[in-house]
Length: 436
Image (cartoon, rainbow, N blue to C red; front, side, top):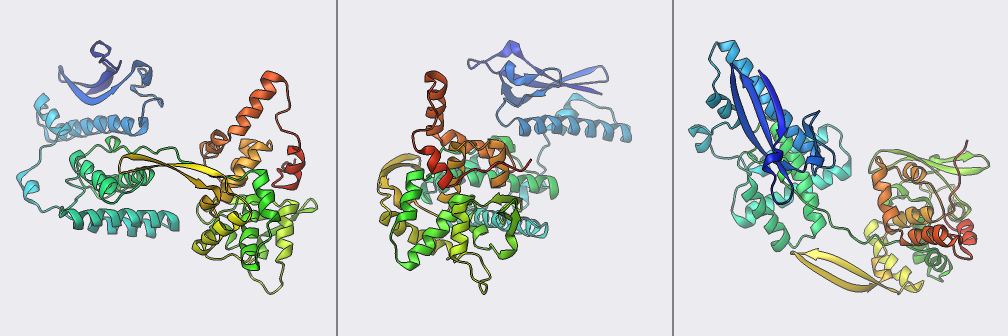
């Protein structure tokens, strides 16, 4: 038994894509099987007989090809063990198993019931709280679809037609945004893969065909002037505490969940200064962050031997509500155009910057300001605790000022930073070099 995959360049379509065929040789017979995949010649590795990384969803498509090979070999071994004669019809049946009458008559099990088992398995394996929360929301949407549409969803009957109905329900009846729907699709694929690979459920849909595209969204961040205005704003005591927590996060890049739990045990002396060492709540990644003078001044302001936590952090909902007042009082009233996709329609509106101010704005601010001040992307990745540098590079894409400064320096021989920027960099959110 020999198998191979070939790209039929002689059957190129109008878009320049060629079909991928699976060929099996056995007992002087030759079976050619259309995989249903198409790609351009540049996206196919003929030597390895698989898709290159340039092909969309290459990993899932290659897994599909590997499954065809393993199913064929399993069928071949089974026939050899039983002494049966292999036939082309038998191989076709193995690659496209027919549904038995018993399977057709069996009542499909609700996806909500199976999902509860999936969620419990994630919890038992120690997945992070944020992951479990996202998965629970996915189960809630699936249950809501069953209740509102009167249709029982089951992993064993979930096909592309069902998937389109679910997406239409989420997008138009629940009015979920584009990226929320895309996150739903990503979580659904994880769930269906778990059903297939760990529970032996025959899932009729190829997971690579369940696509949800994320749309670019505005990452709101603050300029050095915005930070100066916030620090100088005259505020009542309860808003001053909220402002100080925001600024501390702007100087360190901490998430709300991490600044909430900061304790004295997270502080360490280093080379005459102070650093933070902690394990991030969301990703469980250890990070080490140098505290600039501005950050240390905020900690000193709230130093109290009786206080367990380093800063007076309110609940996230209350803090985000108060931050709107802080931003308005600090004069962050310039308009920002917000673009959203709801129900398939693109909506654009202008809102004052302070209305977009949240605790997570601080993390975006730290990343963009660090890049503007010259921090290497690799260092920023370590400080922010990103597992992949591609996540950090997202911030490099949104810093238009960095692009303009670089072009001016290269093409016109001028300094990349405007006058006064160096002074601001030493005052606010300065990027310190790592120890040798």
